[in-house]
Image (cartoon, rainbow, N blue to C red; front, side, top):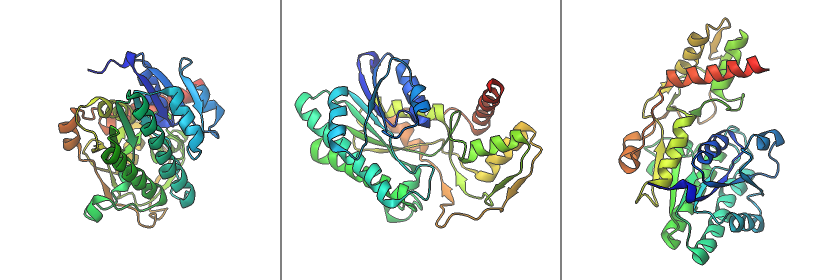
Length: 316
């Protein structure tokens, strides 16, 4: 069992949706947290980080600043969440490559040098995406369909290289369709909830894409499992429930749970070019390697997410 209270933990992307949940959970363990924050991060997001967390502001593209941040944190455990384009399929490919792949490389190189000098690094959890897979039957399972996913494949390849060549204790995790309180409003679930609560119509694609929806608390527990599980260095782990629901089913659940008065409008929007129609985690393999499984079903998670949004509106 990992004694987190004795650990120094570096979390990049700490002010993002998932990063904030992870920081709060790790803070509960008593670990000393160093929160990596982008130079252009919104101040209100940074302000939500717990007071005891040490904030390190740097641009992943700047190798000097990354090395300085790693030297200050001197981490035992690293969670690398920082990325651009996760919710923007039109992200500029050059930016995605520079931040998501180049930034990961800068971090890995800084960790390699630090580990060779001090030897305290225990685990690096690189956070990828299920969209690296695309169609699992193609290209040994990796078939990214947009710049964000392609840049994450490149980051995974560098991580794999640094594990093989230098022995860095790297594990890649690939979250599936994350949702939960605090998610940006323009993404599917919060957008549907907002429309439902407002009595507005909700234009969407036909919604036949099958996704493995996973509640954010489960994702955080999956990250922690990947950080402490023995013998998983060099592995790539799916973080999902292993269950598929269509996007339309998820929105239908929201409509039923809220008693929405507006109309769902499936087919009002077109599918994205190259959109993947089926993405479901290999949950059994992850459970065998780490002992972790998701516990929150879609209906339960949506109820929690809707309740959080209603509470937010009430406080406003």
